[in-house]
Amino acid sequence: MPDSSRAAILLVSCPDRPGLVAALAQCLFGLGANILDAAQHTDAEAGQFFQRIRFDLAGVRADRLALEAAIGEVAERHEMRWMLRYGSDRKRLAIFVSRYDHCLYDLLLRHRSGELEADIVAVVSNHPDLEPVAKQFGLSYHHYPITAETKRAQERKESALLHEAQVDLIVLARYMQVLSGELIDEFPSRIINIHHSFLPAFVGGKPYHQAYVRGVKLIGATAHYATTDLDEGPIIEQDVIRATHRDSVDDLVRKGRDLERVVLARAVRWHLEDRVLAYGRKTVVFE
Image (cartoon, rainbow, N blue to C red):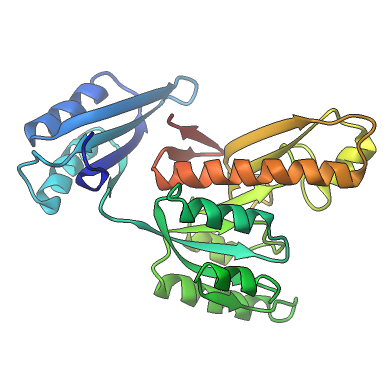
């Protein structure tokens, strides 16, 4: 198997038309690239085409500038939006938390085991409670207390930290603050939130309490990109677990936390592996 650091991933979306797969394949073949795997999807209703191509760089007869120029020429001809990611360029990740530690611990343990290919450069919180967890894993912890009066000023500090650290992805691991539109707009499709409900059901706060009142038989968790519309961003991953009339609110919370860990980890891993393309209010997630 080729060294992943010698591979690259091309993500493409554009209006659907004949010849798109051939155009990209011919472009890469002409440069000496060996395609390792490729997947595509067409949304017939939206008239949109999506593709993910992973290829080996070992035989490519061009530097990065020439490679990107060649792909850019094909993209311009076919009105493609495209991103090229190199395996040797590790993404930089920041995790936002409040007081709940289950998602934070899960991400840090998965990262330590090598499951998440990224560099965690900061843990950010509006409370001091989880600093010992970050220190346990040798990570910097940044505490920004937030009130209604200080929210915008503190977000500006957070934004400065994120840009200085060159963060590629922000993970809201049960961060119990609503981000401002200004901060969200700085990182489009680069902020992943875990919501403790199977959206679009039970949006907002205390979804397990809402589920208990309704006597639902399934509870779930949803990982989605954060947008200015609260809990309505493009969904990346979801999962459910059964509930019964015997379950108390505490039982639902306990069951839900297990789901939150797994669903968030999947979404983060798929984003880091460049498997997700967001468009409109939806996503394409390539297996």
